Amino acid sequence: MAHGCASIQRVKPLTSIETRQYLERWAVVAEFERGERARVPLQTRFAQLCALMSSRSLFEPKQNKSQRPGELSGRWANIRRHYGV
Image (cartoon, rainbow, N blue to C red; front, side, top):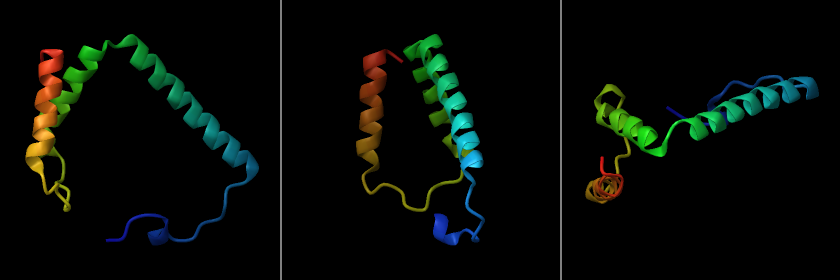
């Protein structure tokens, strides 16, 4: 299956009003995310990320797995050790 814009059926370009509205919606999302990052402590966000990563079996596996799986697990071990998780 192809990915990217080349695989999508041609659509009508956005108007300047639609483009502005689109960008405004994403600005609201960005502001919300900034607030979340400021409100939730880094250690809590890291614990949430760890929980997500430990649930990886719930997601479809990628076809192009890393050729160096030990390298990634080593990085995660360093992060866990640093944050005491």
